[in-house]
Length: 298
Image 1 (tube, one colour):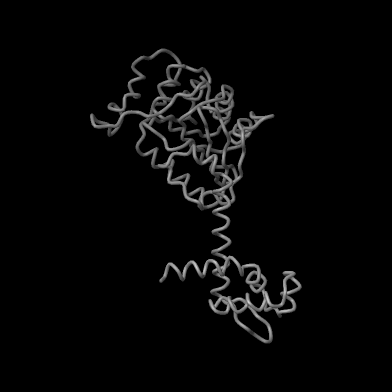
Image 2: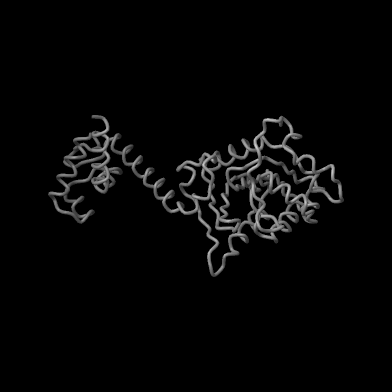
């Protein structure tokens, strides 16, 4: 059966991958394989027979080399191992990311992990602040706040020219508008800040554009509104995922920037009623956001 054959191929590939890896760059003779892998001649003989049986290796000029199929199979195995390794390493963090995020294993390969652990849990927030300070533009999905100081850093960066666009989860947006923070009011009165509101975001996310034109994404993880850590990745798959997720949320959001401006203007709170937003009607689902435990920003 195909399923049994697939398992046999995978088991053979896993077991014989050290030998196959030695055959990729150039043909090798059996004594060379015995020496390089520190195994017996009989082990090498069995490995070569198994790989030949799958057309992953072939004999040439008294030696053995990988076939094209063998090289492709080894590449697939190593890519699979990278994905599993990345997912396993981040499993504790990933349980705090919503299932609607569309996160896939290839998004996680090559990620840098930053944890808010003792004795210096503040280092994650500090790293986030430095990312924003150095950015040309930042697009954000935001459901939670935990650090009272970051809003000042963001406001200073916006005033200095960083473009900052954020889609807030509905309950958080209402909370922040009522807080009337002076730093956020400064941002709202500038040309570099736009705030939007959506009923729910799948995860807290930053899509960061650097001044050199490169882009990377940061997944920010909270647990009970406490900053647990962040996952940073500048790989092509991660950036494509982050930009797509942000745009999906942005398309269903409505703008609320004026609600964060200075002065008392009760009418400006109307945008927080989803029925009053663009494309919103009586059938809109209720909000499911959370305001966090602080009056500050990220």
